[in-house]
Amino acid sequence: MLSDSIQRDIVIDAPPDRVWAAVTEARHLAAWFADDGAEVEGEIGGQVVLRWKEHGTALGVIEEFDPPRTFTMRWSLVDNEPPRPGNSTWVRFILEPRGEGSTLLTVLESGFRSLEGDAAGKRGHLEANTEGWETALAGLHGYLSPLSAR
Image (cartoon, rainbow, N blue to C red):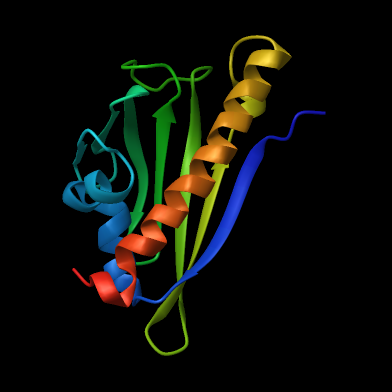
């Protein structure tokens, strides 16, 4: 049976406020995640635009914005199409302070079973995004490492 979600946990050697900025502010997202730019309206109902040179543009809407703890957006998996039921998943970033200036970041993306299309297409989105989060979180870790303090 197709899994409905992806969950990744990573401890980052940066305080929650720096991690929060990295996952919610356009200039930071463009540095570690969306390689062709980003736009973020930081409030519930705010629009999110993430652009990749090779993958197109993902449009999203912020559904939860609780600094510096929780940020949830619904984003479309169809290039340049606004999110709606059937074409989108939810991405939730949960930040928890850990020790001296570190943060446990949990990324949970869910809703793959609700996507339109056949099982192979849904599985393709799940597999692509699973790989994508591995790469993205490695990039975030490097971006926020103490040697590259921003």
